[in-house]
Image 1 (cartoon, rainbow, N blue to C red):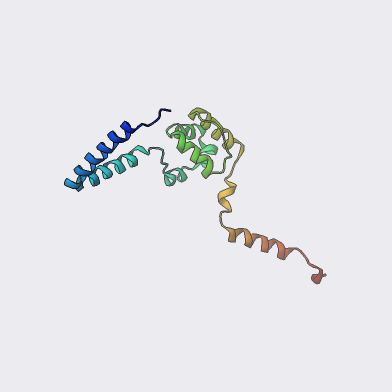
Image 2 (tube, rainbow, N blue to C red):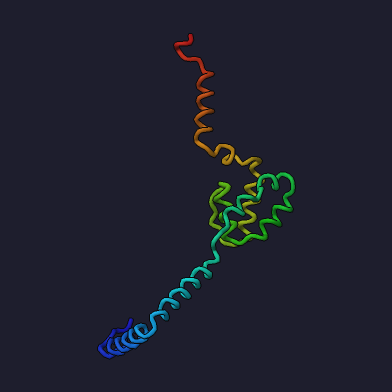
Length: 144
């Protein structure tokens, strides 16, 4: 790494001074520059995943009825979307980075599972109610 000398600091000070004068004359220039930079950052973030769209894909139904259609559907998705499908459907973690490998992993997991057990019991109240029903059918010492 190079060292910064006095001449570098003086020239940078001149640049800052020129920027300050330009901003004083036209303050809208800085706000428009910042807005442009902000919009470019938002446009550049293409890795955002539409979770609502992914949650509407009936993975388990397609895996049972039409595996070819499921594979076609998965082929249309990007790598971040495929990784989100793994998380959304609790299909296990994978260290795969290649799109085709992730698709093969998802298809393999769906062949092993017939139902989505994690979505059937998604609320804690349902689980509590089923435990209470089971406990009420078990005789206690007082019932004997």
